[in-house]
Length: 83
Image (cartoon, rainbow, N blue to C red; front, side, top):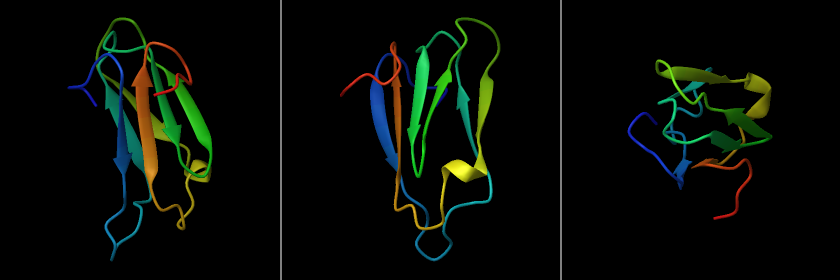
């Protein structure tokens, strides 16, 4: 996600024959937006630093179940903003 800024949304699905990887990480560019919201089996909100080097957020494995059909990623200037 280092190339995105402002507000936006993306839906991520696993490869059908493989499923979700053991670990999911999201790289973000500080200052490009303030919050990253991950909607999977659980909702997780990361606060993005205003400055510094690229930050990597690791999604806790408990936030994702093998049966989760898709993950929605939302980035914005406010936590939980509606799109």
